[in-house]
Length: 254
Ligand SMILES: [Mg+2]
Image (cartoon, rainbow, N blue to C red; front, top):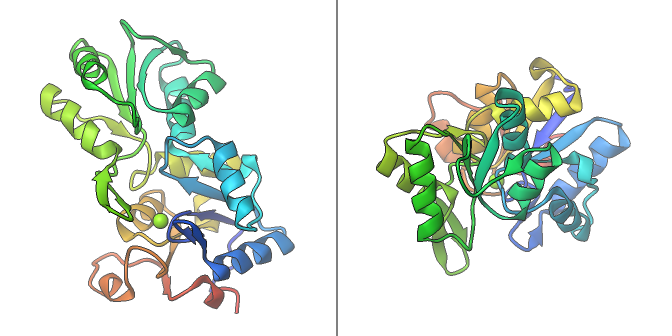
């Protein structure tokens, strides 16, 4: 095992499962903390602010500061700011997204935007989707925080941001630039935040199709942990395997 100088870490299925902390994950973070190894939590969740997420981790007894949280909304806001600096944005999303846009000084407008950015919005409606479709057809850049089609809940699967993106994509024939995992933009953004190189950093996560693929895309080594979505057996059948695959994070620093 190589000594990595920085860690990027997924949340759900890696640090906790729903409302339950994963004990081995807490110890893993304590080890990083004790050894002064820098790390960031990277999440596709676009609705929560970094403050919300830090608080959630702290309530589980996991060391986390607001600065250590990287969300797809923050990465999307940074992407818009650097590629379309003067852009005015039409945003479908919750506070996690609107706060992130305001934070970097992007004006949010209801009409004539240069950019349409979509994150999950549990108050979404026909008018918002209709406007997004029209603005994209009028030439606005189309971006999305994350492509997750469905989200597991206790009651079953519910629509994620990806389901709504698909709707706009189907109507307009335009594919959005996706910022979150499995794309690399959020990973690149997190590396920049931490001041680390891809070669010296490892991406840790439970989901092969998001965490591991995003890490590979960005040129990082990857650590798959089987406390969430993807099983060790499923990993064995993949053409491109993660650098490491383990049962729990307890095994890592042994
Ligand atoms: Mg996960």
